[in-house]
Structures are given as structure tokens and as C-alpha cells.
Amino acid sequence: MSEDNHELEHVAAEPIADPGLPEHLPRPTDVDPVMEKRAERQVATLFGLSSVFAILTCVAYFSLNIGGHPSVFLGMGASTVALGGCLGLALLAIGIGAIQWSRKLMSDHEIVEYRHPAASPQEDRDEAIAALEVGIAESGIGRRPLVRNSLLGAMATLGLPAIVFLRDLGPLPDNKLAHTVWAKGMQVVQDVDGAKIKPEDMEIGQLVNAEPEIFFATNSEGQPVIEGTALLQAKAKAAVILVRMHPDDIKALPDRRNWGIDGILCYSKICTHVGCPISLWEQQTHHLLCPCHQSTFDLADNGKVIFGPAGRHLPQLPITLDADGYIVAQSDFTEPVGPSYWERDRSNLT
Image (cartoon, rainbow, N blue to C red; front, side, top):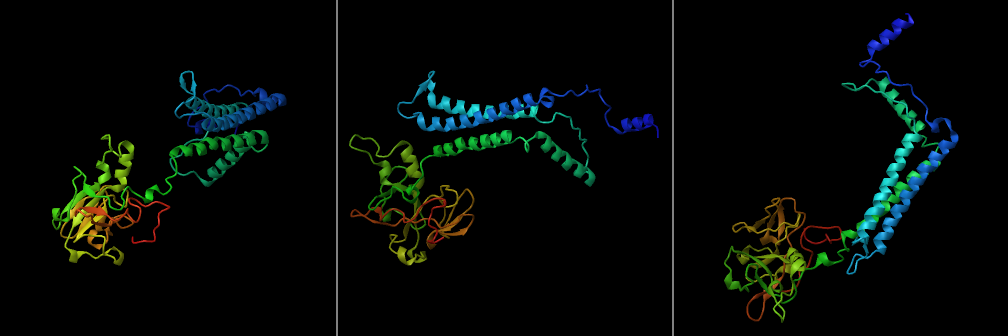
């Protein structure tokens, strides 16, 4: 076959004709070793600057005050400016370094790959892997330790601000999740008006949404004892329900036989699955249903889970009567309320 016929056949096989690309010209760094080394040092310097700015982000986090008398810069919070500026420059430096690396040091030959409707033949796959290996080799990452090591250092250092910023998720809860505001002798009152509750106020089959009396208490100046965010946080853990059933229907555990009053029991209102408030009460079956994910608890059987995704029983609050005949707590809950968490003791009734 003649050379002209071969070229015609090759052109016919291409889906798109050659648009007439200009002749490829080498870059200065391709032919001048001095300029190549200079470009390599520029890229490494940019990666090094990224590491410096990432470290400065951490320094600014700990050194600049954001409390009662925050540091100010140009009329703005210095901490915000420093954190945003340093982290932004760290990202910018690593981005510019990567661009300069690709523009001046990596191979700039065009590679064309046609899209196939299905999986390519094995020969094409092998060719693609070979092309990838060539690309890695031409990037110079293996033979340019200065660029490689500075990039790895910049990427590693850039993770430091992320680790430091985790501190802003808040102080560790310590044992706060294991306790509520309930205490010995604290009255159980209705959650609407704070009215005190006596056993004779409840009928068999009735459910009452209740709270600790401290939520309605005021100081000598008439101000609430607990208010604002602290009140919302306390309510999220201390909300309870009172239910009354026939004493013969209750299957109390041996250590819980004195936790009720003539068939009246008190349970946490917070579902142990994801913390939804629950008060859907079935009088005949003594079941309490969560409206979020249908977890079902048997309140006649120590709050045991009988259906749904909840992983443990509903915590019970021990109650008794005070000298005036009102329902009060014997103590705080003997276990954490709400959803499970890593540090929680899982050895008790589930």
C-alpha cells in the first residue's frame, strides 16, 4: 500500500479530522536546566508558604482573643480576619503551586482518548494504564523530591487547622449527659401551668406531661431561677410523663417496687432512639409510642422496648409523696436519659 493511501485510510478512521493544530514548541523549562531548577524552587516555595500559613492559622486561633474584649483589626474582629486570611492564603499557595507545577514542569503534550459506548478492549485498558504510568513519570513527582516532599508537607500541615478547629465543637460534656435537674424532694408539676399533682388527681389510664418544679421557680426578685438557653437544655433532659395503671398490671423489677405510688409511674419523655418527645399512650396495652420512628415501650414492664429501633428501655424516675401529699422525685434518674452515646454504661436493662 502506498504512503498516500495509508494516510487517507488513517484520516478516514478518525471521527474528527485534524483541525490544524500549531506545531508544538518546547517551553523554556523543557530546554533550559537552569530555568527548570528555578521553576522547581518556585513550586517548592509556594508549598512551603502554604505550610507556614497553615501554622499561622493555628497560632492565630490560640493567640487572638474572641471573648469579652476581642482583638480588632481594621474595625473587624482580628481573630476572624487572621483565621480566614491565613487559611485562605494556605489554600491559595498550594493551589498556585500546583498550577505552576503543571504549567512549567509537567508534560504539556496533548492526549486524545475517544469515548466508547461500552467497556474498552483489554488492549485499550492496558494502553490506558501505560499512558497513566507515563503521565506519572512525566509529572516528575518521582525524580523531583523537592517538589514532592514540599507538597506532602503542605498537605500534611494543612490538616492542622482542621484538627485545631475541632476544639470549637464545644467543651466535652463530661458527666453532664448522665444527670438532669431532678433531685430528691423536687415536686413533679404539670408542664403547662406548673400545678402540683396529687395521686387523687389522676385516674387509671391517664397520662400527664410533667416537669420539675424548678422550671417555674423564681428568685427573691421575681426572676426565673432557670431561663434562656439553660432552661431549654434542662427541659431537653428533664421532661417526664406520669401514667396511672392498675397496680396488678405492673411488673416492676425487684429494685423498682417502691418507685411508684399506687399504680402511678414516672418515665422520661425523651425517646432513647434519637431523642424525640413521646406521649402517645395506649391505655389498654400500657404501651407508649414514639411518633418519629414508632419505637414502642411497655410502661407496665419497666419501660421495656417491644418494637422499633430504640436500643434501650425508657428511663424511669423514682417518685414518692411529700408531707403534703404531692408527688415528688426520690432522686435524679439512675441512668442517662435520651439516645445512647459512647461513654454510656450499657450494662443495665435494655
